[in-house]
Length: 174
Image 1 (tube, rainbow, N blue to C red):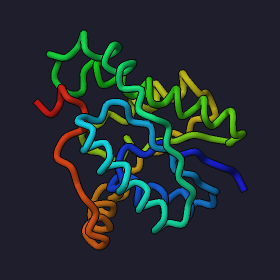
Image 2 (image 1 turned 60 degrees about the horizontal axis):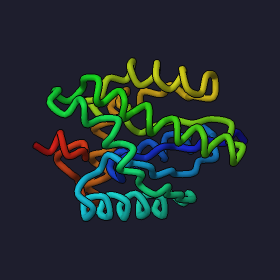
Image 3 (image 1 turned 120 degrees about the vertical axis):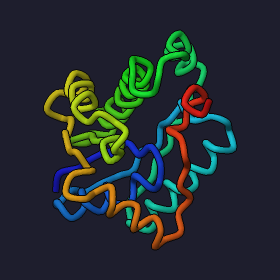
Image 4 (image 1 turned 90 degrees about the horizontal axis):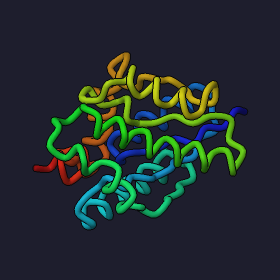
């Protein structure tokens, strides 16, 4: 069975994505690395929900500590840009690089990310970044296709999962 390390940005985005990968025949592990999430209590809440989702879906969970200063140094020059511009691409790249590094060390076959389930994220851009980092080890799955976003929202409601109202970064919160 092929293995996937799935970068999970939050539990709501993770629940359907984990289920889909498992249904597609993959062995999956959830990976929470999100140095963009601010403030700390928001980070803790999202991590807790991601862990809960992994328990519900019976997959292992791994967290890599925040590294928020690295994220801030990288993204703060673009603080005034609107969401979806260069700051976001840099943020995706940082998180996918760390996912690939972790996957390679643990000998996973593939990486993927829940970022593509959001209707607010540009999947094509995420695919380009993922492929540039991991090559054929990046699974370019657009989880929002075939009503994936609707399904993940329904699952979140069913399990009464916390659903945030911003991507997580201090700049988007403003």
